[in-house]
Image (tube, rainbow, N blue to C red; front, side, top):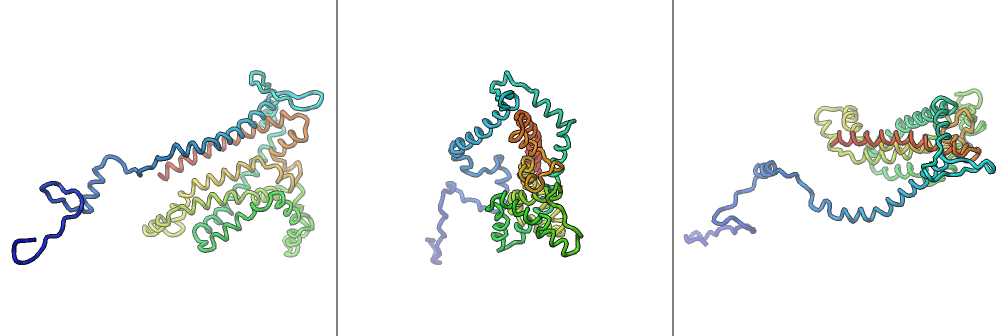
Length: 342
């Protein structure tokens, strides 16, 4: 209360500590920015590492189990590949001690794969997978982009339709293709009705187009889902900023959306291509011809129908080495893409 007769009162001091004998300086935007710029320590979220050890402990049993399920079967395959064969029963005799491994069968498979009869099979497999992956990119990227950016309220419905094939057994879906593509099936009936062809197309008699299309049909959901997840996480404000800077919609896509979706594109490609290399039943169902044999069909022949199991196991090791190169390239490319975005 002031001493003069005006009856005015002083405003109460704000709560908190104030320097003794001094008035606190007003906080302004410039002082805040100066304080932030003067701080040498970067901002860290409090409690960012709290509980990390607990999650590592909880993940350890599952990680150990997955490693065991991979390491033990892989070592068993190596023991068969570098072992011998029983001359009486034609059964593989695994050699579990690496000191006594015999690399004769593996050397034979390696020679045949580089310069022998298996070389066309490897090249054919690479060609089929490359064509199928290219079609997955051409079909799957627009679908994933539309669902992530323009689907609106229909997003959940479209995602359900994309995932619907997973609710049906893979072999059942491929058998449905057989009914559609046989000589008197609906596809040939439609092609002949529209006068596109004059006679039925032999889709199921060693036609490589059928094999590639079947691979695309079987694995394209594996491509769309991770790519959709990446496209959905792209901040729309970045696209608006690009348009504010004068970019057209097409230019914003090429310079903003496509580079930011590169990690998801690499992940989707790896998830889609790797199982294609080991797929043998798709080719067997829709073709069954030696002219379209893939490397997985050769592995099936040696392990299930042949008498030299060690050759099939050696092919598994050789194919695994090839896929390991693909995985290393994927990991390096993903790391570079993440560093480029950071």
